[in-house]
Image 1 (cartoon, rainbow, N blue to C red):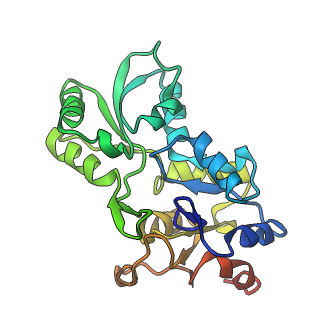
Image 2 (cartoon, rainbow, N blue to C red; image 1 turned 90 degrees about the vertical axis):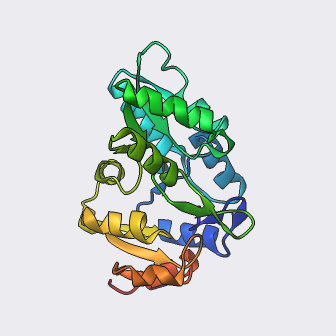
Amino acid sequence: DGVLTIRDRVIEGAPRALKELRKNFKIALVTNTTRVPSRIIFERLRNLGFDLEREELFTALKASREFLLKNKANAYLLVSDMAREEFEGLEEYPIRYVVVADAYTNFTYQNLNTAFRLLLEGAELIAVAPNRYFMDEDGKLSLDAGPFVKALEYASGKTAIVIGKPSAEFFGLVLEHLGVKPEEALMVGDDIEFDILGAQKVGMKACLVKTGKFRESDLEKGIKPDLLLESVNELPKALMEPL
């Protein structure tokens, strides 16, 4: 979201660009979108004309579920109604975590206070994706989960475990799947901090696109992308030249 699409609107030339990139590169689609489950993200992309396989899609929600399974734990879910689907089947385990994603209208005082009390009682905090904001359907920025994670950190005194971007573990999972070293990979994103800086910190090169949540002020944050493009549409041509 923000690179290939803006919600249900395709960024011009993105399906063709992805098809061109496949001719020469291994592809993984990595997203911190957490309002809807991985299944819906996959189906939405396919319906919008993108050619991809399910195993090429890496979502922060899916990684969060895998984290809970690995730790044999359930969680109090501060997520949207639709995203609950991602966490089905964990009921046999004890609640040892509070999971925060883009809960949309479920970010109520009551739900946040329940999460806060569980944290005080010993639960640990998981930030599925700590993004500050995203580009919404109306062309304006909207709050993402990050500000609510910060509120719970401040109130409880706990530090969240970050599952999605810019977690080095999340990037490592994708690189392992692709079978490449960090220096052999390019991350393409619209978030100067979580996409660009996050990727560079693990040794990847990073391309910033001026779509989605991008703002010109992002370029004043002291983070220098290896490649700066108007949109992903320009990427196949740009990669004909060495970075």
